[in-house]
Image 1: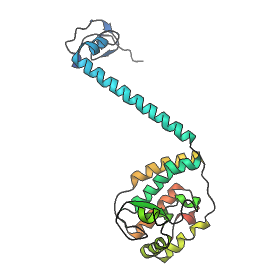
Image 2: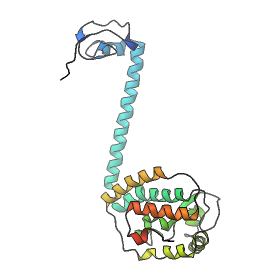
Image 3: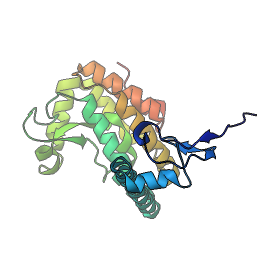
Image 4: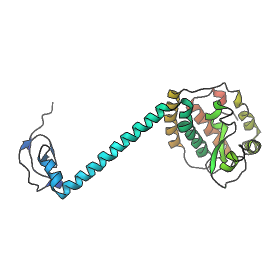
Length: 234
């Protein structure tokens, strides 16, 4: 067992030259005993006041972080499973799809103008099971996705034009996937997994084949679907 030695209370570093008590003590900060001299140094010197100010700011920030974390946890507790999916999981799934399609035009209009969404070929409202499947999600302009009702016909034409008819045929088998309903604890784990995956995707332009392969790879990592619905064999 290590035995601590007592040291004389004498200012060092920022507190060098401070009128310390000189008592022999075990614990010191800047060479000053914590019981008396360090407190006086904080209150009586310019250096100490600056240090105290920084400590107060740090404590305030830490407290704010704890409060915000507690509020977030309370909000999560109140959310239903689908509410949690909508608020936390789906945005990250959509982000991953956009990252995979980085630099690509809208799948329906072939336009690069305006803000881009992650457009679902089978909408979340019509098929909740496919909402996590990356083969069902491709970059699509906000105008096409939201203001054209999903732009279904042009989306379909775009898939065939960019990826080929075999890939389109695969996507159109996805509704055969048995219904999947993830509970909230699983969604929380999935959200953490998605956070890690997002950090691994590089912002580079990929070929159609590479985009298909990356979708398949991540689908398999997420392990939500049966393997035949995870990817397209080409």
